[in-house]
Image 1 (cartoon, rainbow, N blue to C red):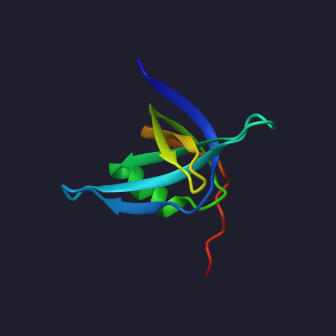
Image 2 (cartoon, rainbow, N blue to C red):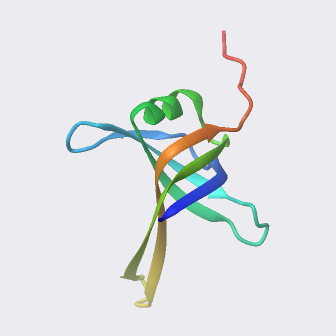
Length: 108
């Protein structure tokens, strides 16, 4: 079973996209900074009701707890100096999300 549970902060406001078949998906960028020496970054995809709630109730800096399936991709490329580099991409297809930040007062 390939599952992951991560607590982290959104590094930017959530972004809403639409798939080829018309389904809405929310994409958040999450920083897991439990270790002071190393911060791990994830792109998190949320669908259905979770998509709607993330778009409505979260913003940059909010703390969340995400459960889902981890996918790791390695992308190899050549930089401008001709050096070959590898970029690791961590993606989570979320099955659930919990909002840990306190509610903000709404603007009137």
